[in-house]
Image (cartoon, rainbow, N blue to C red; front, side):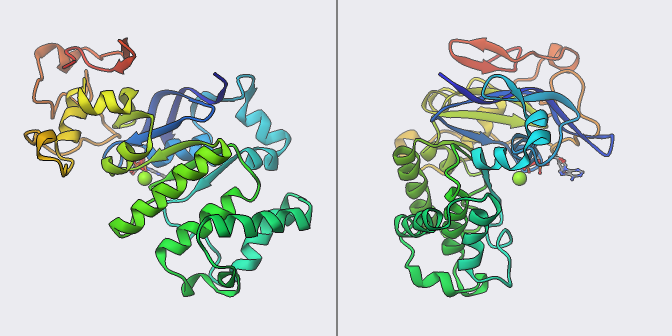
Length: 311
Ligand code: ADP
Ligand code: MG
């Protein structure tokens, strides 16, 4: 399978001390939906921004299409990568210009990228229809539309250039549950119809469970577990994943598990704990975990960073 974006051992140190990402490797393959989960501060947004080339990592590399370094690609032609990968920002409304009518905001990418005007505009109208938005919305300003509509407009604007990759940061944050469901259905339909590849970051486990084929769990800037979504949900291998999943509200009583309450505060990434980063909160902690850094090891199709995995 083609690897579209390959994150190789990427680290991100803000201000020389905030270790937001530490040795992240993640390959995004064509047409898959990867879900990124982890508590607030675990580095999800930073990873999204690194993959979009919006911030330059302080270590490691991002390789596009298996051959080209992202920084070289951006240096050569910044816009070319934008036609390939688009980001849905966490705050859809804030990503729209408050003083421009939606018509002009949707026309903007067509002009910037020198797309054929008529073709580009036909695509905009088709996308709006797919989003279930009436064309009358084009004459409105962002403050005149709802949060759910703003999300849809942002999705339409991201898709005008027919990118193959969408990086969505907390795409459902701030939306009512029913609107969230509609938006996820829409994203899934678009993925199937247009053959898109998604990286979706969310602290909402139900969102990730619903949408992703593969789940990547982050803790303090590192990947602690990754594997097929269904398998990870059924049988979490890292104690952090198990705790995270146990706090997820599950409707079906047969699938409910006892809640694992994590002790202690989330440590700071400025001074992460030695040994296993999770050892200060881990219910299964043993002496070795306090001193010995666990590697991310492959175990039956699952990657787990733990000396004593559960599964
Ligand atoms: P998440 O999206 O999972 O909440 P972030 O990527 O936003 O995580 O943040 C990861 C860590 O990096 C946090 O400790 C955050 O405070 C820090 N951080 C994020 N952006 C910046 C920045 N521009 N400058 C300094 N620190 C930052
Ligand atoms: Mg975030």
